[in-house]
Structures are given as C-alpha cells and as structure tokens.
Image (tube, rainbow, N blue to C red; front, side, top):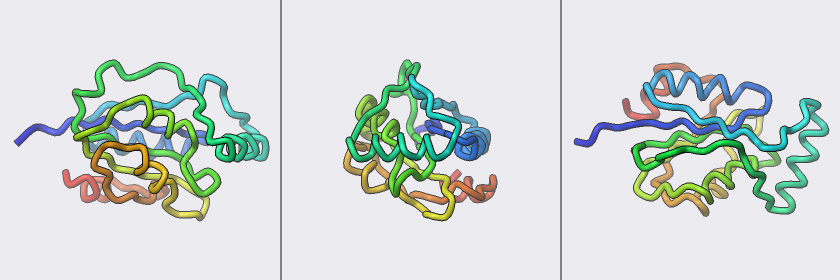
Length: 151
C-alpha cells in the first residue's frame, strides 16, 4: 500500500479557514499552502464581499502568489475556503486550473456564517481528482478530521 502524503491548500480571508487548515495539516502531518491573492482583499467586510461578488459574476480567476514546486509528490489534497456568494472564492478555481490533480484524493472543507457546504459543484467541474465529501470546517476536531480522512 502506498504511503499517503497530504497537502492542505486553502484560502482564508478572516482567519477561520486558516485555523481549520492548520488543524488538518497538524493531524495529517502534511504540508500547507495558502492561496494568497496577489492583490489583497479589503479587511472591511462589505467591500470584500462586493469584490467577491464581482469576481463570481465575471467568472474571474484572481492570481495568487507563490506556487507548489512538485504537486506530484502528494497523494491527498485537502482544499479549504470560506463560503463566498454560495460558492468557493474564484481564487480556488484558479488553483484547480493551474494544478493537475488527476489520480489524487481531493477532500473539501469550507467555513461559513451559516450557508453550509458550498462550491462543491464548481470544484468538481474543474477538478480531475477523486473528490470526496465536502465537510463543514467551522467546528473541526482532530477526531473528526481523522474519521473524515480515514487516517
């Protein structure tokens, strides 16, 4: 059996998704990569929300800084993001268009203010990996992460 190697990729605006991604990476012993937009979003929520809606409406793909040198070394990708306008932030779709996840297990989680799991359909359209059930990232525990990722 091949040893699993995890990479947690995430975008976080307010810090909630970053916190959840940290717990996942710690639990899996894997690496982390944060999708940091080249042009930062406003810290003022209504301004950020308007920008996110404009990006969604235009099907934009905002660029992110940095990159992953060798994604082929990972067997499992955990992808996290906040719920923005009933889907994932467009920067997540940019990541999926840039990296080939064929043959990888892809696990999704999102944080939200009450909207629940969103963005899964948009991600599945672009993801060439084996997409597993999306979970709520708001209240993760190590035990829940272990069960979800079958560790």
